[in-house]
Image (cartoon, rainbow over all chains, first blue to last red; front, side, top):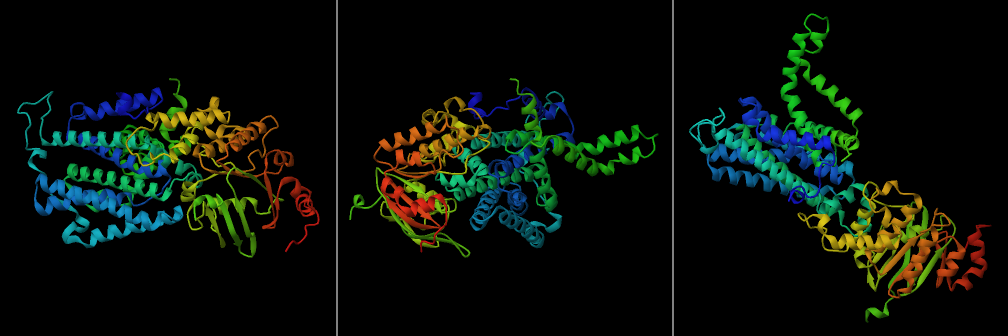
Length: 355
Length: 258
C-alpha cells in the first residue's frame, strides 16, 4: 500500500523521513496549527511550489535538460484560469475551461520548443527557452487588454471558494470552515496527488530511461532508445504539471500578474529550490521549496527580531536590518551549495542512511 | 529476392572523412550469419571508426550500410539497434550513477515495449529484472548487481559493458576490444562468453582484438584495416602469414598500400 503510494521510492534516511513527515503534518494541519491568513498563504505557496519545483526537477535532475521557460508554463496555467475568471465571470465552468486551455497550450508550446531545439546541443536548448521566456513576458505585457499588462488581473472565484462561503456554520477548533479553507485543502490535495504522480513517473520504466539519458545519452541511443522522443515527452509532462501549479496559484492568489508568475526572479528561485533540496530526488523539491518559501516569507520577520535584539551593538543592527534579507538569503544559498553539493536530501541520505 | 540471400551485414564503399583525414576509406565487406570476423590493424587504422559507421554513432561521408539487405545508412543509432545491431564499446560506456542491475535492466527494457510505460512501477516489471539478472549471471556480475556502476573495477566494467550488449539480444554483435585492460584472470570470462555466443549459429559476430592468440582461437575470418583501407581479408592462417599483415600489424615501415 505505502509501497504503491510512494512507488517504492522512500526517503531512505531517518532524518529525511522525519523532516518530510514534519512538513506533511504542518501542511495538513496548517489552518489549525498556525491561525491567520499569512501562515495559510505561506502554506499554500509551499504546496504550489513543491509541485512546480518537482516538475522542474523532472527536467533538470532526472533528464538533464536545462530550461529557463518553466515560468512560462506556470504562467500559462495561471493566465488561462485568470483570463477566463476575469472575462467570463466567477464560475466553475470558466475556471475549469480556462485552466484546461492554459495547461493544454503550455504542453503544446513545450512540444514546439522541444521539436525545434531538443535535437541540438543542451546550451542551444537553454538559450531557446530563455528567448521564449522573454518573448512571452513581453507578449503578456503588450496584450494588456487581455492580460492586464504589468498590472495583472484581479478576479473573483466561484462562490464556494470565497471567504464568505461557510461549509459548516460553527467554528471547528476555533477555525472558521469557510471557502478559503476549502480552497487550501483543494490545493493541498491536488498538490499531493501531483507530487505522488511525479514520484510514480520517475520510478516508471519511462523515468528510468530519462535517468539513463541524463547519465549517458550516447549509450541510451545505442541501446535503441530514441532519446529525443523521451526528452520531448518529459518536457511536455513537466510543462503540463507546471501549468497545473499555475492554475492553483491563480485560484489561491485571486490575482495573476507578471510579477507573481512570469518574472525571471521566480525562474531563478525554482532553480535555487531544486539545487538546495537536491537534484534528481523529488523529495529535494519538498525540502527545497519549503525552506525557500519559508525564508522568503519569514526571514524578514526573523531579521527584524534579530536586529532589535542586537540594537546596542555597533554595525550588527544594520547588518541584520530587515531590508537586507535578500543578502542573507544569498549567503544561505552559497553556504548550502558549498556544504551540501548534493543538496539537503543528498546530505541527509549520506549521513542518516543507518536504517 | 529473399532475405536469406543477403549477408546479415554489409558495407559498400563505406567512407568517412574528418577534414582532410580519411579515417575509413572505401571499405566494402560482407558478414554472414554464424561467423565470427576479427578486425585487426594498428592503432588509428580505423577499426573503431568502422564500427561507429556500422552501428550509427557516426554518419558516413560516402558509401552504404546494409542490414539483412536493407539500406540503413540514413538510420540513426536507435533504429539500427532495432534492426539487429548490438554494440559493446571500447571505452566503457555505462550509466555511471545507476546500479549494475539497472544498467542491464535498461538494456533489457530497450527491446521490450515498456519504455513509454509512464505510470507502472519499474520495480514491478519482474520479468525484465529476471532477464537482467540472468545476463549478469552469464557475465559473472550477479554478486555485484546492487553496486553503483561507477564503483566497479575496470574488469567488471568491461563485463558490464558486454552484458549490456548481450541483454539486447541482437543478431549482430560487435565487440570492440572486449578484454582491453583486463587482468589475465578476468579475460577468459569474456572470451568463454564469446565462444558460447559463437556456438549459437544465428549470431553474426564482429570482434576488434589485438591479441593474436585470442584471434587464432576464435575467428573464422580476419579482415585487416590499415590507414582506413581494407588491406586483407581471408581465413586466419592465410591472412596472418601474409607479408602485408606482418608489416601493417607490426607497424614497421608503414608502407603506402594505395
